[in-house]
Length: 171
Picture 1 (tube, rainbow, N blue to C red):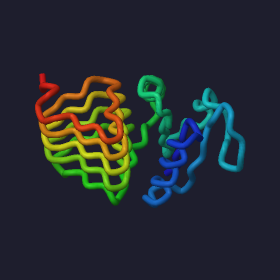
Picture 2: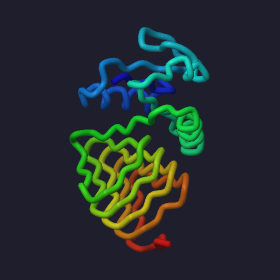
Picture 3: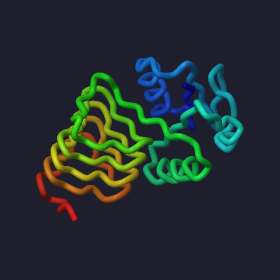
């Protein structure tokens, strides 16, 4: 399996590190409009040149809307989205994680939680039981989303923030 990361900035570098640690990918490369280097194989819009059966892609953009737009674009082209989950995270077997999400080390995604695509659950973040996290959300390092909340699309819960239980009602 090959991984092509679109965007070689900080988030892209972290995703590449986690992907390498997973042992799933034979090769990991980047597309980026500004960066150069050994693992940069083209510009972002060159992604179709790399479409292949055993290639997954991940748009590593910190901007929630841009990340989701890219994931939609990739899916429309029939490209598989990578899902990167650190082996040092806790993800309940009863959680549902959509393709195209990243869960970092020491993060918790608890029982009966749903993550739609393009979500980032960052280092040490907690999403407690029964939450529904809509597409394109980012739970920043150390942020906490307590039980039974529904986070609207593109929500960012910043570092140190806590979303109290049931304060964003499930629909």
